[in-house]
Amino acid sequence: MEEEGLLYAAPGKDPRLMQPLVLAYIGDAVYELMIRQYLIAQPNQRVHHLHQEATSYVSAKSQAKALDIWTPLLDEEELDIVRRGRNAKSGSAPRNTDIVIYRLATGFECLIGYLYCARRFGRLRELMDLILGKPLAGEASGAGPQHVAEPDPASDQPSEGD
Image (cartoon, rainbow, N blue to C red; front, side):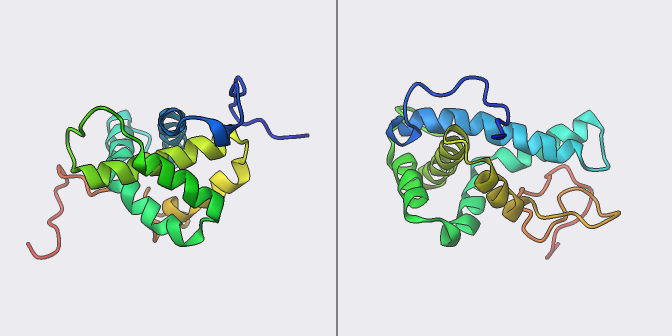
């Protein structure tokens, strides 16, 4: 039996032929859902904490870092999808980041959207595991070796060099 994931309705055309910004649009939603699923599987279930953690993962800067981790492992087709997303003109300027980071994040979301629409759920999970890591027993959320989320600025802990 083919795994359907949460694919409610199949796209109207081959995902390779879809506009990159359309793939990024669905990729953004899929990524947010996967991050939320990952976070609720962690020990800390306070909604405020979940929101803060999710926000740190979905920032353009974190997505660009994740893409940097993925890039050496992507095949030619996946690299082409990222390139198409990165080069797509959105018509709007990013609000909280520079244009280079924003375009990398768009390429990242485009790849997620492509893998989702192409029903390549196993590959999507494989890539997500690289950036989320596998928390050890008793370890706090986000503590995997490849955790790419930005630090919480409201944290009481001083950063290195303070």
